[in-house]
Amino acid sequence: MSFKDKVGPENEVSGVGKFRDEAGELDEALSNFRLSVHSWSEAEFSRPRTVVEPVRRRIWRLAAGWALGCILVAGSVSGGVYEHHLKEMKIAQARIVEHERLVAEQRNQQARQEEEDLLAKVDSDVSREVPSAMEPLAQLMAEDETR
Image (tube, rainbow, N blue to C red; front, side, top):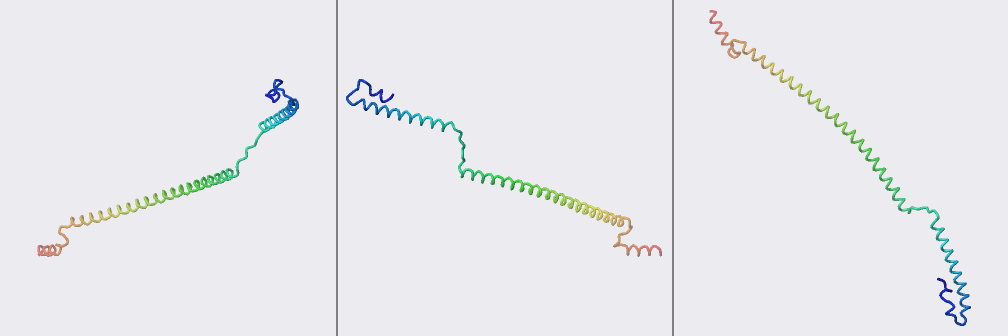
């Protein structure tokens, strides 16, 4: 609704015609201004925009990327070192088991040798007619029988 519509012919008073002409100019100026504002707004809304990230966010993203990359590299390296350590431990355990097996085998051989020596001694003791402690007495008796 324009200003002219508000001030109609029924409200005509003396000097109102001059006022109506000024109101018409004012109304035209305002409508031109309104049209220019609308066209400017429409042009601004329709133009493509580029989103600019804030500098802080970009810096933090860059820092977070580097930090995650460093963590990934450190994790990979430590995983490799850990796998190598486990491999070395398995080799060392295998060597220890082999050494213990050889020591046990040597002990078994020594025990068998001791048993064989003991059995040989028992055999020699059993095969004698007289125990070695009584041998001098047996020789004396043998001499007496021969006389």
